[in-house]
Length: 328
Image (cartoon, rainbow, N blue to C red; front, side, top):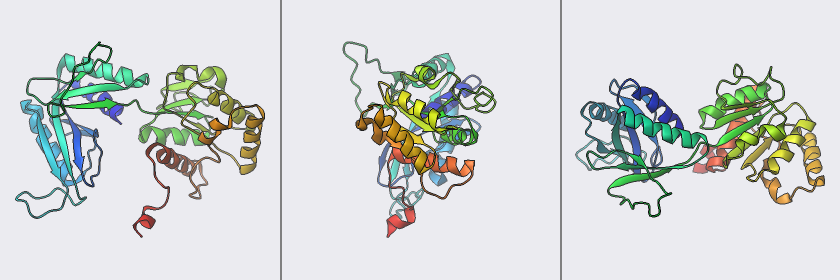
């Protein structure tokens, strides 16, 4: 999601300054994690969220002032629900969040954003340093130097921005279209492979960073630098599944997740063929087949939801159980 925030911020800065709100510290139960970001303009337009509710509303109000004055500041969002302080709390989640408000403006800020966006797009992490001292601007920490400068935690917020994971959708049919939309919404970059240009094209997949219409073995070459690769095989047949699995499992960095659509019989046939080709069993645990969580999905839209839920489970962790049962 950070990549989307930086893209939006760069777009806004072409016409006006804006404030980047970043969660720099948390304690207890809170709605967002350290590093969560939100962009706020002087008019109060926003992109993304740091948790919503009264706390976010107060952050937006203060950010609009920062956008006008340029005086960056830290805000504590109190979600403890405590009545023991003079200040009204912002919610009852149970914890607190520290949020840093930093005004971005001008050509130098746009240049920094372009560098950040480029590195994240090509799959490279970026370490961003945001100094707290007045008059100092954010910068990228250069690890190529013989001795990178040390940064004290009380003097700056240092975060390593990780590139968004890439979801490769193999098969550009009806499920693929719905899955691409959801995947982009939950923070994945999207690549689509299908040897039918009439199916795999920008009109059907406007959110795709890559549209690949060559055979799978050659098509995935541009994805070689991607170390956070997920793959969803929603192809039109057994032979396409087999070709895709063979190509993906032979990568230097096999995908973190490979989901394969199909009946149990089709899945068994494909896996038996893969084992017969001598591919190590150590690479097979990354295969989730049949793909998705069991929610009774029938339509392409519902199947896409079940796949997206499994992607989140693998990426973030979790049990897949209803949250209501975890309270018992």
